[in-house]
Image (cartoon, rainbow, N blue to C red; front, side, top):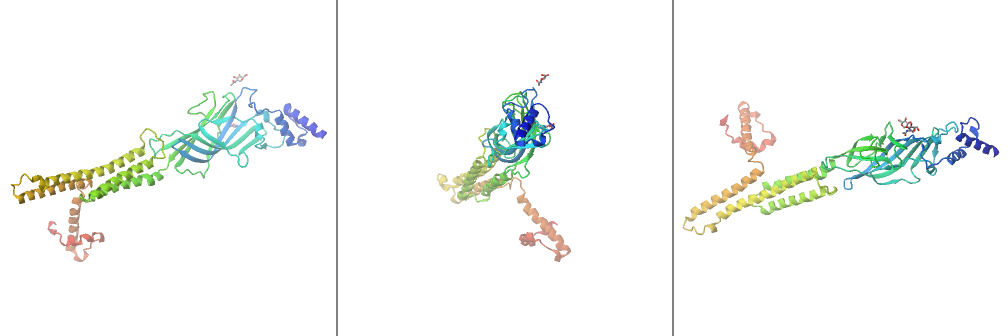
Length: 427
Ligand SMILES: *[C@@H]1O[C@H](CO)[C@@H](O)[C@H](O)[C@H]1NC(C)=O
Ligand SMILES: *[C@@H]1O[C@H](CO)[C@@H](O)[C@H](O)[C@H]1NC(C)=O
């Protein structure tokens, strides 16, 4: 026992005054570390005596980026934060053989740590299952490696003008709360400052890259306070929007065009088709932007939805026009409107009425044809006869040279009968 006390007093004096050479093997680590922290004041920064600032090397290991919310404009990240700095008061090189001490989380409160905080944090929490998720290694040269695991939600202002074809940059600002640059200086570690887990999977985004900077876009504390920044550049995956929005809306627009091929007299069918597609479009529009904040600018999805709605609405309007055109002619054609001109020949009147009726219907049908992009391009109608002619020509040539060779491909079987009656004189 006296030996131990002697050794301890030697070691204490050693800590305070000189480097030891003897008695090393006899010192117990427990006593040593207790003695070392006896004199240590964790409420004072490492360089309290000198005017040199403490450099803190920062690094981040991103476990996962859990959610990126447009509604609340924030993102949640789960990460290990590692800080490395040197505290000259804790040098024990040459006194103990160990390269470093692994301190328990209960012991860590006795060590000074940087007052790191996240400027744009909304919520954050440490993980304490089963013990506080913290690690502190004290090296014999007085340097400390301090790692902790946090989940934090940080604000990420987003510009949604190109939504859903947008890319977002979500940043994290790391700053010292109370110490100015005179005391603490944060820097990103020179090698691999931010590492993202390889298994990380974001449902809606792809992490394009990560940038670190030893300065901040906006330094809340002012230039006197150290602030470093990490940017996560994220690109939105459009797969979800293709399946949930783009393809369904395209199909609704196509569905509204079916109306052009229906008879003009099929009023209930064409009206219900038009109304239904307009209503579905409105519902789709509501669903598409339900997860977005009510921003006042126009987003890409708004433009898409507006164009689709315009198409569907135009299809409904087209039927209204067609219907009115047809009915106007019918009204003129109605014999009751010709009551006063009874001295006309009854048969002649009926004929002219019929002509008007048919011309009215023809006008209406022409509008339908234009809607089908048939008359306007003039392709389909001319294509079929010229196709038949060409077919006839080929058949005729083959027919002349070798009648046995006349082969009509299966997809042209429908024309077989026509071919037989084709006038071949044009050759
Ligand atoms: C630190 O102190 C030394 C001398 O006391 C002085 O020359 C130097 O400018 C000081 N540095 C800072 C950053 O204040
Ligand atoms: C911090 O990083 C610098 C440069 O990479 C390095 O020289 C220094 O030793 C590091 N400090 C600690 C405590 O690791």
